[in-house]
Figure 1 (cartoon, one colour):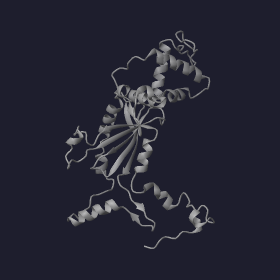
Figure 2 (cartoon, one colour; figure 1 turned 180 degrees about the horizontal axis):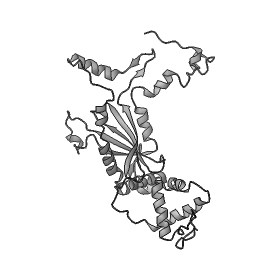
Figure 3 (cartoon, rainbow, N blue to C red; figure 1 turned 180 degrees about the vertical axis):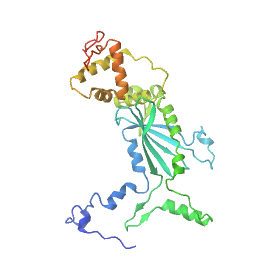
Figure 4 (cartoon, rainbow, N blue to C red; figure 1 turned 60 degrees about the vertical axis):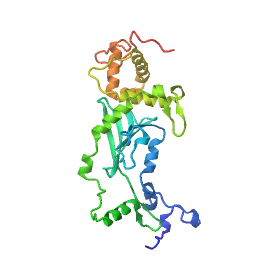
Length: 302
């Protein structure tokens, strides 16, 4: 195939010397660079400013590394990425699920909006991808080589790589949520610390504040729903009351702003405000009035 030629319309700076010309950002060669070979770039982006937890280990049935047989087949893997900068109220973690029997990797976002852990965003990534070479030819070496092996062995029907209804049925949404919940609710980091990548294991007192806050939020939001809610801590209600009074002067959107500040869903904030009224940290609601004042138990801030 002949090498493709470019015109001045393909470049941002067509008058520059040949080695310094830049292709336009929407050019097909530039756009396709994000798919060279695989989704490794997106995977690496998930690790940035994140705390990574492995919720499913592909070798978990072999507790000791030396016990893994040479012909062992890895099981599914589930990685959780707790972003230190949360995506919004109720955000818990991103996840990435791999399984050998799926032609795609499953990426998603977990939140708790007051009804337990749930998936609010789901993407399917090709486990392998090709790229355009310098001559405009699309190359997918691994898949092509696999096809040739199957063909050589007499299997003229290569493994299907498309997303079908059968593939969608085989994505274990329930298991992903259950495994994520178990891993996210684990508070062993308080005693064991966490491993920084790259770097050593950090003890709790060495955590940056953003790391500690992200872990505590994930632990709280991943807790299983209980019959009846546990009593709210007085210190929490007092902090909420002070935040309520500070934000009330800014007008509408009070609940939304408090939800962002405490990283909780708006229905939860409404329940907390109700509890703060009942315990005397905020004044009782008055007929025809929307706001509240300081309650008799609220201590002034210092």
